[in-house]
Length: 200
Ligand SMILES: [Zn+2]
Image 1 (tube, rainbow, N blue to C red):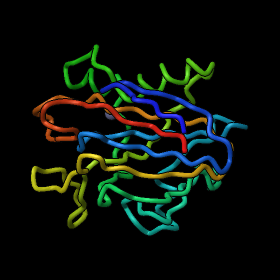
Image 2 (spheres, helix red, strand yellow):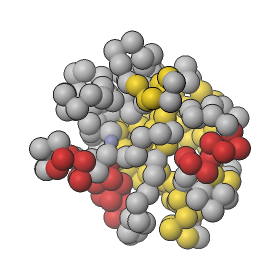
Image 3 (cartoon, helix red, strand yellow):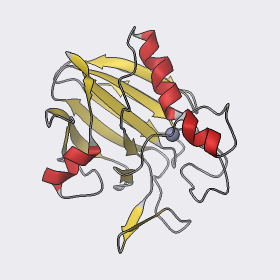
């Protein structure tokens, strides 16, 4: 088993052959892990939450789901959920544009982390990649999306186990979001923390 600790607010990329299982853990809890995956034979084909929730009929990832590409190819099976269902399909990954809008132009972002991580494998970032946001607490009520202090959050040690359905290039970002005021409490109040990646 290979274990990698992804530092708070940073990212990591890895190759996963078909059948490879891996576990993502938030050791301290309440830390969003933006998970990206691209088909190894064509990195322009990436995960699409929008295509996935059509067959699953759920706005949140659930164990037993198969995450699809934007061309509806099965990419990742959600094998086991040890985080009480606190996962999000809805929010686009944070990027430098978003932080510029918040007045923090030099802030780290999940897209920046993805770019750094894929560069280490010699890959460019495909256009506008989307993520599945594990350990991210959102609820939908009467058509509106909420993230409030009352929203259940991922517990310390919360984890997910995933399996590659095809050969993939994957990346995980410990979301660096730590701003107050814009209305979202994405990560723990004390700031971002590490994410554990285990290839099992
Ligand atoms: Zn982020």
